[in-house]
Length: 230
Image 1 (spheres, helix red, strand yellow):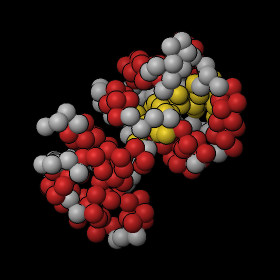
Image 2 (image 1 turned 135 degrees about the vertical axis):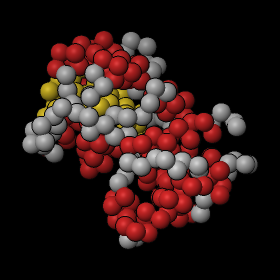
Image 3 (image 1 turned 120 degrees about the vertical axis):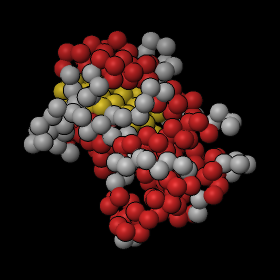
Image 4 (image 1 turned 30 degrees about the vertical axis):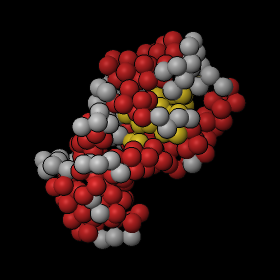
């Protein structure tokens, strides 16, 4: 969990090599009351700023100098290893599963993975930053939808046993939504959502997962294991 005081603004570091994108994102976040305490443009820079300022959350591109490959994911793992309470949201232009699994290979708590188009969706971006700063996990809805579609169409997949309404609940759980948020999104009662969640975990054999973070982790672990071809 973050050690940030509840009444303090969220302290954010932004790492993005494109100046216009970086400064535009800074302005958007500051207009929402977040405190952008530092910026960086490459792998070494983001780690230096992180170590110096110890922010609540780091928002960064998946590809940065020097190689423009997976610097954001590598930096995310270093940050979480050195200071687990700092959340990390990685932005990408790619829906490739390789990036998702590379980011989440060491666990999901405090990680977010969003498509870059979400920078324009300020409410969702801010929600994701707060979620990971609190130790939660967030996956972009577009990416989750792609993963679920591939799994549900796969012969023998346990996801194939889920009803369309249960898949809707699973998709929102994988985004890090609370039961109440799921109920509001699907226009259901809280009790109906809880019943569907119970059914989802029963069918996926994830009976023991209770709190939001753990069930998100369980869903993502299930999806990751499904990707191996079993």
